[in-house]
Length: 288
Length: 308
Image (tube, rainbow over all chains, first blue to last red; front, side, top):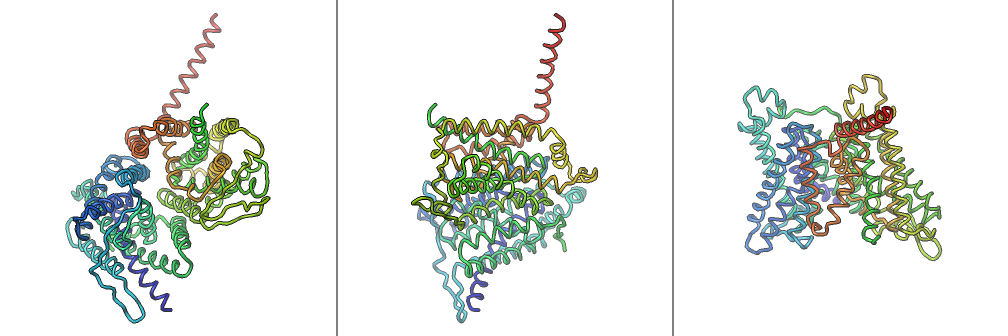
């Protein structure tokens, strides 16, 4: 029972970052109606930029994380330009393919700039671990959970309390109606994309600081986690994505504990296959 | 012919099968990021047939194609109704699922003094049917291309027939195809089985060429490349994806100067093509124009002959 609870706790802390990845995915999908498969590799670029700052020995953890977010946003601006704005008149799936092509470029770029495949990422050494009776809350897990939760609260405040947020929700509900109301749909779309990149950057920084290292495989991994989370949450629902991340995190840590590492990936991909095969076309609105 | 040129030719032939399989699904309006899964299933099945059970090479190739088609049918039954991004996400999950499943898949048997068969993450060594049957590698590569030509002709005729018509109708507008009474589910499952079989045959050919397969051969990059080949080479004819393969492996990869930048150039090329020529070099309009040109040339000659 204690094992189950410990895995549950670890799962919730890990799942909070999955929620962030899923929210970034959902933001782009909701506003643009398009899937961004370069989402993970965009974040990868940011993490590698942060890691290089760390290696140069000048950056403390907050600076490394800030560079990570800035790198992800920069890469996001490139992806938005090439795969979304340039293809706005074509079918949504064209953007999806294009974003995968661009993600190849980003991954290769990372491999070119970093001769070594695995790079270190700083850990939060100043944070203490907390023990709750027999349960242990690891410092990096707490940082993941706290950072992701704060970021989610900020995102929901932005979406539900500001004019920009209202505009994004309006476009997500109906871009035609939003156009008639005088919303600049293209500008709102680009803003949502960059916001999603920043959210992804934060998620990437939190995950990297927990694992204390990064490999090029992170790119596809993060894309798959974000996609699974989004589809688990109903493809378009923001609260759904937040919940979907927690579910995925808990399922993964419980599988890891009871069945082992290889089963975790197997179960996680099977889950994606299942939600893709069964997902209906109905979509939960953002306003409710 | 140098060994290097021969290896390039072999890869062009083998990857053409995977590109064809992704192309058939593209015509159906389905974007697959998972054809590498069927490729590796075919490779493992063919290897098990020849190396573990002692089947002849031809039997191994048939086993690979059959296993790919079976996996395609199972995949199709569960994904037939999924469209757009759901199909894409499901196919991506399928490809990765096959890869991680093979990491724990063991099926080993004693053949002579050795244990032969898939050994989880260590892969599957010793698929030597090509050498035990004494076929020279040059003849084998020629055989790959001969088989590819046969499959290509068969694909062209299939796509011209009723089945091909149904595939294209569903790809153009699934709702309209349903209203005229097309059995969407049956056509979709059959087409996914066909695509799985094509990729599986490619995998079977690869396994016997390389003598070794591992879970890592189900790399998602193979699936994405095979999808991109059709988009580069053109969707108007089955020759399109093969032109795409030849361009990528024959040009981009053989220029060793570009070696470190290959993915950057290839990715950029796909991105640019999607903007300026979304249905590839040999798109439907170009193929139609070329066809008319060829016919007019032919009629011209006939008239000239009649006039004389």
